[in-house]
Length: 285
Image (cartoon, rainbow, N blue to C red; front, side):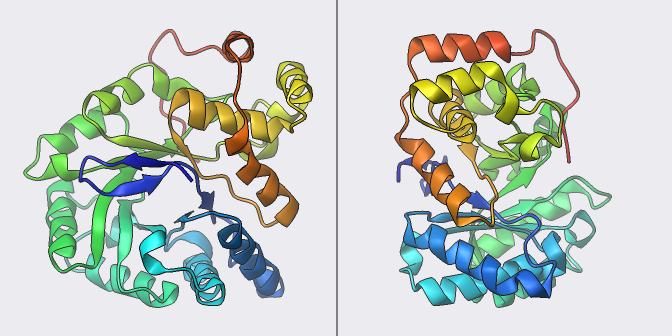
């Protein structure tokens, strides 16, 4: 697994898995635990979750999987997210400790503000920095922040300690490339891409049925999802965290990191899914 050096000096894997939708159905619990264990045993070291997912159920699934897989903690990079209404001084530490308990961990590698709410950003930043000093987290970041949000954040004391912004990004939604991604790159803030496969067409353009993607996939003896993920991680330079409870799809997604797209492939994709030529609203799901 390749890594990106965060501006804090800590390393984050360039590819991971998401857990949205896990932990919501008791009947699927064992299958979901096994799928995360499978990912861990096949090289995945970055796992993204949140207290919101399954009301903590996804964190419990990850916690059980971590216990079963028995991977050295130093090799893992675990991300979780706090609800906006829990991001104030009166609730954030309880939320964080509850997430850690469900995960069976002493600390998080990354803690994110899930989206902006009514709690002042200044208060959340202060708490994030305190959590770092207490060694409950190693780094913190945000999610679903656009350029104006990032500028406001960085204007605050210690706001520049934010190391990552997790946003929606897939081939059918490249709006962040107009101004947000360049802004973040300039400031060495990493971009993590959630729903990097567009939730199998639920979010708009279905890459799995796109003739251009399928043509490139056939050339590489690969799947459409593998081509999309290879483009995001190797060409765009972002950190994709696709979610799948299927071992076959997990294996497929992991192998996407072995694909090297040619200049012709990249040109075809850029023509079919062009970068934005103007500012567009930030996509959020």
